[in-house]
Length: 287
Image (cartoon, rainbow, N blue to C red; front, side):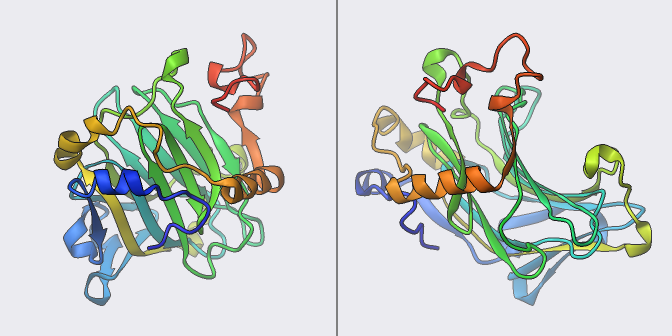
């Protein structure tokens, strides 16, 4: 899957990591395993299509068989249609344990006719609280759209149909932890969260509309597996040549954040009365 012009594909980075980075994808049978929900999770079309469903008894979920440490992860999703209030479709990377790292896409359902909210977060050493939320500029239930995470030692970039919507930069030099040592699996789940997901929990799941179903296809990971990357990344980690947004990508990012961002932890003074997190300083190179 092409990166497009929004993100610089730096030849030096690619050549250096050819021995570690590989393309994975093509079959949900080969790359993933169903972890919960029983037959609410199904794989179709010889492994090219997967669905998750939620009913009043249970949701469902899957995870990747491999763990990854840096790279680009792409997945196409078609979200729950109609009245999806109370439901959450989560698609994310996560390591394991109490001090886990995590990179989140969460799609918060809504009543028919109202837009989904795309909720993003970054956890480091078990701590999140770095939420940014967006409306989408299309109906994510009508067709498949591509949701991507580009993760390297310098930055994490969230992309929707190759439009960058968020960039989280490595700010370790000012004391902000960054996820760069713990390998992560890919996870996805569809579950009931009507205590908070839609209008703060005021709108509950309408179980008469169940089952709720989301679809997945065209997974692609151009990434290091944990073992391969540990061997090859040390020679690269000090370089400044990692993939980053080009000028066109930065303009797209500003467009999305100007017109579609609805919440940004970096501007929430009420939430952080003692001062915003250090990476949120507008004079900082990390914002």
